[in-house]
Amino acid sequence: MKRISLPPMSLGSKTEDRRSQMLLWGYGFGAALIGMGLLVLSIALGSALHSATRGIQKLSIPGRRMVTLKEGLYVGLLPAPNNGPALSARDVDVVINSEDGAPVTLVPFPPEAAQANAKIGTSLFQTDIPFDGRYEVQSRAAENAPPAELLLIHESLSRNRSDIAVGVILMAVLGGFGTIVLILTHRRGAAAKAVK
Image (cartoon, rainbow, N blue to C red; front, top):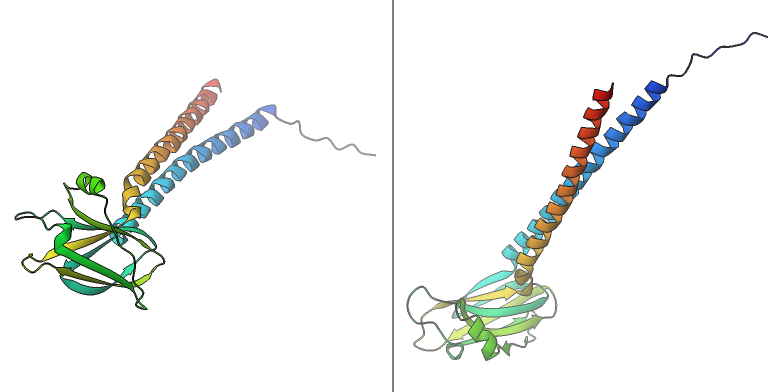
């Protein structure tokens, strides 16, 4: 019987293959961490942008308008005017009804909280919208009161800063670890080439 002789295995080529695979995994893992950090940041920014564009409704006083409101807590605010006296809560009357005519309860803003918001305007009321949908907002002003603008501000708007801060922190942590992994992988690759 004829013996088949196999070529001798090169240990060097096995080691090189292992090293190249480790380098590939290192670069891939570092890039994945950086990508995850960017994804988290983009989600946080997208959420903040969505609530900023959809979280505020501007309405004229006096006036009547159908608006789309999201479920959750809203605050009714009269922005501070650029010139002239600000309207007080006694000068304005606001009524919100659902599309089928059911009234929505408006709770007057607590005086202490209204004082805290005095720099940005006059806080009129807060209300809990029970479900997403169309609502009719009617507003009347006192006889001698000048026309004004009413802002309905959704609670999600107050979370924007914290959402963005969390997104930036997670992006910095994940991106930092990813960069460290890439640097270490690059150094190991350079050291392996120097040994050759």
